[in-house]
Image (cartoon, rainbow, N blue to C red):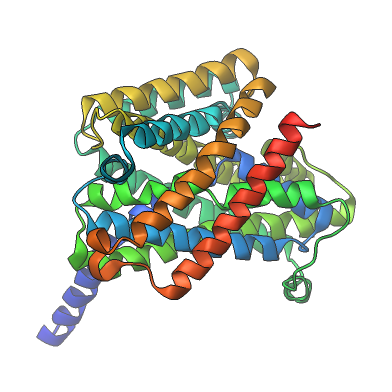
Amino acid sequence: MESHAEKNVGSETSTQKVSFLKKIGPAFITSALIIGPGSVTLSSKIGAVYGNQLIWVVIVMILFMMIFTEMSARIGLASQFSFLEILKRKWGKSAAIIIGIGSCLVTASFQAGNAIGAGIAASAILGLSSTFWIVITTILSIGLLFAKSFYKILEKLMLGLVVIMLVSFGLTVIISKPSVSDIVLHLVPSIPSGSMPLVIALTATSFSIVGAVYQSYLVQEKGWGISQARSGIRDSYLGIFILGLITVMIMITSAAVLLPKGIQVNSAAEMGQALEPLYGNWAMIVFMLGLFGASLSSLVGNATIGGAMLSDGFGLGRKLESKAVRGLICLVMIFGSAVGIIFGGSPINLIIFAQAITIIIVPFIAIAILFVANDQSIMGKLKNTFWKNVIGIAGLIVLILLAINNVINIFFK
């Protein structure tokens, strides 16, 4: 028979598991929505061309992403108002509207790629056309919006998709048998000749300020306050760490499998197809499961950010239970899927437009986060520390340099 002590230990273990699960969520949503088919493709391409030489870039950008996500989480914990409501009170209604519109446009511009990624991955695993699966995943995603407790469902869905990505991409790393010494050797920063465009792209995908700022909304949706500050901060660091881990795993796999054979990839689907002749059909399926997780999480997550931020910017509501928020999220999803089906991808003009918006919006959002996080009247004891400001300002400089690079590429080339 089981003793009372054994029962107590089992009960305590179960309670600890439940307690742990209650303390995670918001940052896992953030990390899941950032890892989309675009970032999977980019990480695969970088590994195939430059091996492990650019892993250090991911580490540095994830540090910046951690700090801004954690700052945003503290803003959500410290204030009863949303981030854009705070800006309305500080800088006026126009500032909130600009950020709301800009955030929506930036996220919406990548929705076509997310929809296509989900369709291609599902097609590779289950058969039928990718267009069919784009329609099905979009309908199912929209259906989630009208379920009760949408945030709780979103949190569990994203956590599940993160687990799928970790397992899928983790298995591909194991079967590819990478060189640990080569990975360690290339942790020393260096920029290989001709790699700067990919370094810039990797920086932009790993360090998503729009994803970071939405963390303040997510901790409020979770119902956390100042008393949960420690959980919120820990969740921010852990969630973004996993974002970096998944990115690095994809890069390592590509470096181990594709670089030696001189195979270069231009899409995430090609990465999965490249694994098949080397390790068998199951390896391709495992990778495609990871791609599906990345695509679906971004399809739902990006639309959630875009719809919620746009709604809040115009004062129509910020909670996921709001009809206005759900309606705008639905529109962003439909827009992305329609563009994906009609054009087969994001039209170049749409991408250029998104880049132009990013030039203005992204540094502005980073400045706003730093401004609010240092406001004693809002933050109280959760105000930024000296070192968080140092790292935050360094991250802001990187974003400004990215904006300058976009200006040069769009208007002077």
